[in-house]
Image 1 (cartoon, one colour):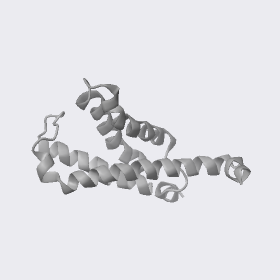
Image 2 (image 1 turned 120 degrees about the horizontal axis):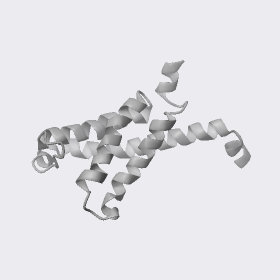
Image 3 (image 1 turned 120 degrees about the vertical axis):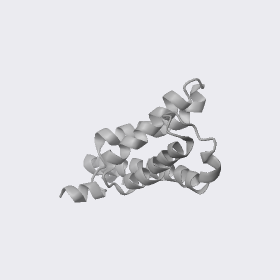
Length: 134
């Protein structure tokens, strides 16, 4: 069984990309859904690092966390969808939590790392991007 799983490197790599894509995108979607459901309350005090307004900043966050992460989960336009997600996590790490200890930044870093990996590796064969390329 182990030889079957680990003996075929392309299968293992593509399955690993699938798990990374669905796992990180799916978890991010839960964050976005929570923000969408509590938009009114959160928009009053949401951080505005780009100086576009609290509601617009929250809307852009929800767009990345819910819609872009949804595209990532299904593997459609993955690299394009990863740009707002990576930008969001970079802002969270280096702007929102700039003066905080690493423990406060850790959550954003734990999303940033797989997003960067997926940006460079692509979404793998178990994705709509792969189907679209054929």
